[in-house]
Image (tube, rainbow, N blue to C red; front, side, top):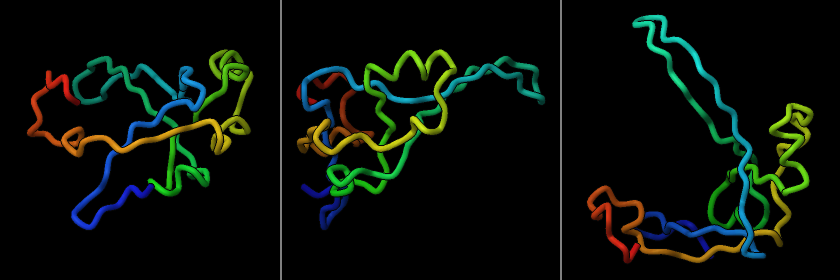
Length: 112
């Protein structure tokens, strides 16, 4: 498995090895644009160094939080110590069509 091909990148579908939900660590905020006064909602996904499994695809990966850490993360009792790579055996991946990353693909293409 390798995320790089001679003629470009290979996209992958990543999921939990047990078929469960992957919960990502992130942050959000509401702020006011100084120029026009507009209220903006923004969010970011937190990434970390790739674990050995994901490093075959990319050098970074999202921080996936296991169910037992979700309450601490969303309730402000967890901190940066939670922002680590997932254990290698918790993820699976398989290649998907390169059309997934194409701006030319039809938006309602069910084959993707």
